[in-house]
Length: 530
Image (cartoon, rainbow, N blue to C red; front, side):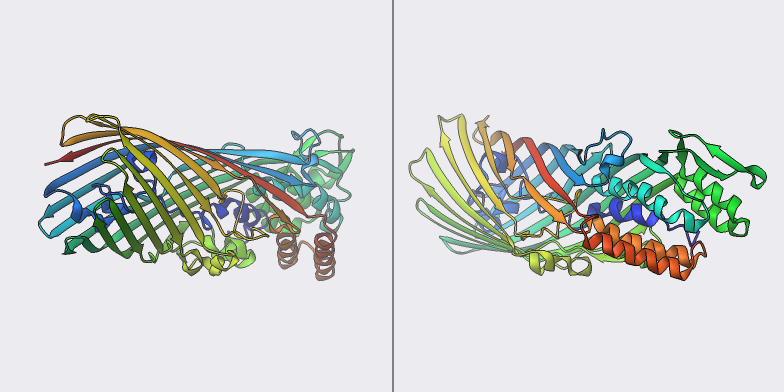
């Protein structure tokens, strides 16, 4: 099993990039946010998360809020690569769309607050990162681009492997990818009213991160463009007609006939090539202090919260071996048993609220995420050009004693830089703006129900790679692997590596991706005061 690498490493390279940088700080924790996103100076029980300093300005007694959100998202990566026309089902096109769907029908959150004179306490529990699963039923461009190289690669190296001139013209395969990620947070705070107008809170958040990534590449076949003569049973030549599809197992069987002394090594490759499956579980615990300050005087409210960085070290249970990690640096992050840094960045939130009339209130907030200071595997955070920042605004109006209506918006700006090196085709987000609206129905003076809808509009983003998905790097390493196994000699391996480097330099492995997303969230929540 130590040499089950020749194709598995290449597929793991693409399959397992799902988690690289894919944590998400979920600031939408309930329907109150969805209908009015600027929450940093908003006084409510949901302030246990957004504005812990403001909890002290609630009326004395117990306050509870229970929320649920249902999120529906699509992620589309439009991949362009020069070898896609060799795909049996691609109709000669060099561009192909890979669409993933992410659903999270149940995203609950609980807020609790208690106020007694100058002292207050708060608790929040919810999904603070991730929050669902994303499924690509037809795999990804980073999957297919690896397989698309096989016809050209087999034409080039088949003679050196003793397989004669192999007239491969097309490829086909079955692929699938699914990723699940949940970062659950439990936050507490203790507040004290230093002055009648000033309340402060100190506390922290405990985070449990849990992820699973599963994918496969199966039934890989190459179509013959011409009659192919190979070794049959008993070492006799055998003709296979043009148009026939050969599975990788069948093809490597010819290598056994040509080189019986390599039977065991080829058997390993044959078993590998028939089906490649990747399965990785990750989990970790982390903690971050949280402080809040709120100043409220007359119609003006000012709020501040600062969340320190959450240090996370994900522990892997994976099918990715140490040998695979050594062969391809891209899969080193997913080596079985490895501890992988994946910090949640520190966050500074500022807000201002103003009550123009007893019925009309407006709010403005800002978020600044310290992404470049959050440690990730191989310091991937250094690929970012700048930190993320957001501007949020909202307005709320009481129609009467029973109904409150509100609407708001949010602009999110990521510092991804020009070359987008931080982004992969399954782990991507783009700058966006969002609009939310909703109502609060006051059932009684102590019970309120929030209903809201929130939609995010993402900007399209393009990324170009001279060495698409690291295929040149993979090809050179595979040549070295073939030499170590004795399939090709050192001279052939060196010539092959030089040829691959030349292809990369000449743009033969160049490719690009265009990323698009959609996101819709519906929320419902109930607030209760005792």
